[in-house]
Amino acid sequence: MKQVRDQQEGRPVPVREFAREPRQPPTMDDAKPGRLSSYTRWEIGKDVYGWMILLSYLEYARDGDGFPADLFAPRRPDESEEDFATRWRADQLLVETSALAGNPRVQVAEVLSSWVPQSMVQAMVTRLGAWGTKLLDESGASLDPVSWASGARPLLGGLCPAAHWDASLDQLETLADSRLVVTEPARQQLLQHPVATVHATAALIAWLYGQKEVVPDRAAATFELADLAAKMGKNIF
Image 1 (cartoon, one colour):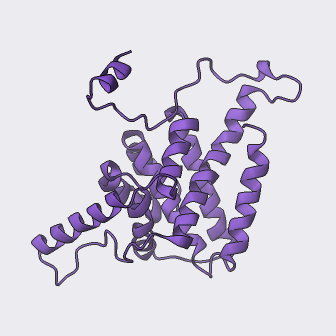
Image 2 (cartoon, rainbow, N blue to C red; image 1 turned 180 degrees about the horizontal axis):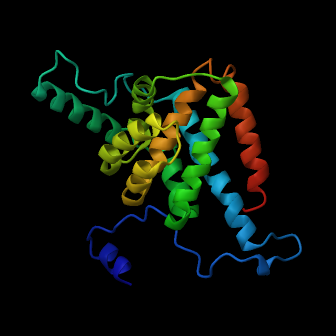
């Protein structure tokens, strides 16, 4: 295989960002005793994988790793273009050097590359977004989209791969404006930048968990989500 030869000869090997597509389309016809059909597991996975990614974001939001609160903040009025570019590059280096195995950043990448084929992304993002919208609707909270996107930036910058930062930040604003609904502009960005869209969605929802007017008890809500993901995950793992 070319990938093996490249690795043996020291050439860069592309990193797979999504899981391989199923060899056969999911079907209801392959259920067995004690085993759900591939179609049912596929549908459950759209929720469970999204929750797993969100839980990694919530872990990072709770523990962090020392990143400044203004990570990837927009250019300030008193900041020159040169100073802004210098700060942006410093933020990039800070994130890149902190990407250690086993941290939430790696956990998200592993979920995507192990379990989520690209054909599942749009449905997974839509369901994950609906989870965040449900939090907003049930709380009755009204958020300023600019403040929401700004608050989610440090979370996104801490976990999203550097190659997707620009697209993720754009999608962050688009999804904040639409209250996490995948409108046509968001869908077009999703098709072009699926990884960026996953991260933007998770970052926005994780930020909601830190707002008492939306989630009064973050610890309890996080535990409930983890418990639900574990129970549903038993059906697909």
